Image (cartoon, rainbow, N blue to C red; front, side):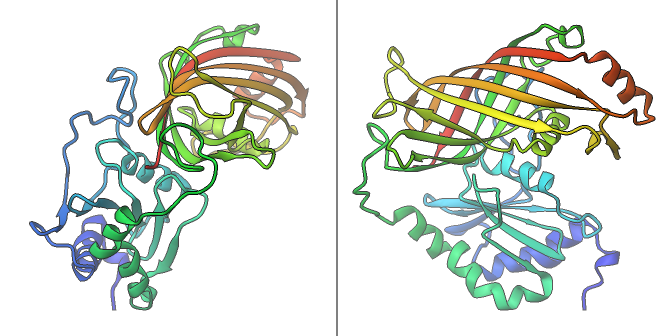
Length: 355
């Protein structure tokens, strides 16, 4: 019987995870190879901007990379048994799995007591999840997904796609497996937002897919991890999670001189008084809410397995005043924010799609 209370992260790696990897057929120096503490040429979260002053450090570096050599790989991220697995842990592990120098098909997140296996780029729900005591009953499932032969089949399987392609060299649908948004200048009509803190910041793209809507239009649903998690929390409370873009072109352009234009509009409302975690460890009722109308235009082209280009943002907020919270910082913000707020800005983006 394993005593998880006495175990740390290293114990989980060596006592629980490595024996499981060995049972799945992964051994150092074989065609089913295990790598640990892999050094990346650029150890930041995104490969492209290469500005270490602004790019965030790589989060959730994998404890193990399991390679079906020349076919594909998956990674394992281990946490302490004392830390329950959170969605933030999932996003951090995904940041490493989706890094272009890793390009993992799957990632496994575990604290020893619980396990969650995800397809890279699909973070809404795990492909498979189980408790430690259920490992034996799940082993054949794992072998059929993560074993060497299974990874080889995943990469070599030929599917004849007879549907209308999205563009030259593209299938009829693609999963979004990663990427980044590099924010440019932002302008606001409000003095609280005059300081352009977003300029140069980098956000991660974590999903979801590109296909066609029922009416035949090109459609891209994109999930973005903001560099400001407080902003992500407010967006989620207002019902803004993924961004759905549409394009009137018949095919996605591969010509930089004649790019495709994808557009997104959002209307959302956040009522005052809703509890939000704007400060670490503190969940406080908001002294204000808002109605927001947002428009985003993404202009870009496909190059190999990337859609890259520029984006323009336009946000209009109508502020809804609420009751004081008793927190001086929030109440001061609520009194200063005014009734109307407009923000517009720009960005460069790079979206990675599966092959």
